[in-house]
Length: 224
Length: 119
Image 1 (cartoon, rainbow over the protein chains, first blue to last red):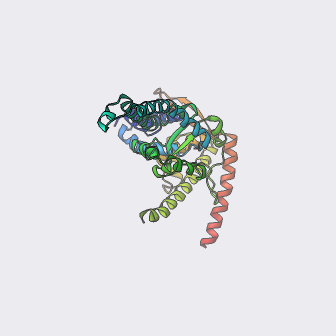
Image 2: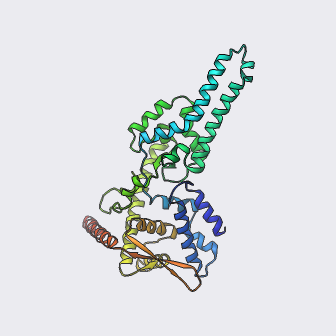
Image 3: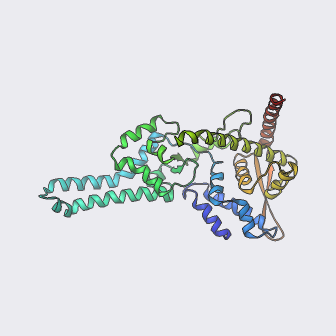
């Protein structure tokens, strides 16, 4: 493995929009180059750094994760569903007024086809946004990030599981969990082992200078 | 059933991880008390001075150094070597000195208590 491919794998294990991502990659790059100065083989150096995904997890575990507030998340979701929602409702109303004689004619209705397309597009947008970048436009504007409980980037499967309550029309039960769980996680977020955190510096700065790990029976305050 | 069996194991692993992390943080701060050092130097010093009992890999040390740097307990000084590759030196800050004192006190109390218990 080359240094570049190692660093690429390291970066890939972290959400793209995580503010510390580039900083962590730069830190690891500096340490690798430092070790290379002693004339060791690349493989030997990289072996000491371990699996890039594990290294990313170790770094991410040192970053404080602050759960996003319920209302902040609600606003982000409202932004995300606003445009496809308006299009979908308009198409649904058009389809309802068309008066189809059979299922066959209904399925040929441009309004129905458009409705399916908008729904599929919305699902793809959320899944790709959350799994690839860690956020959608709504989350981006509200400075939110979807991560694994470790802070790492979520997988496509996890993004799909997170979206299941919408598909199954049980989103309102799912959302209630966010009001009562410690990390403000929805039921399907608990199931997918993901969470939504804020990357707003104003919300995170107070944790930066928190006390270190306690050695005398205290709990670490690192994760909220 | 597997979930029920898994929980205590995860909890134990978590405690062990936190304990090692705390010990490593204290070890790093203590080593930096006597002067600045760079990554590999810290790894070597820990291995030498603990006679290999506290085995530290790059993958465990650098994230800890990263956290200490973010928490302003250590600051970084870059020095360009003859070969042209800059080396990252870590220096203890006043806040790092205070944290070292606090952690040393906690560790000493804990170690004495355990020694009394195991006597």
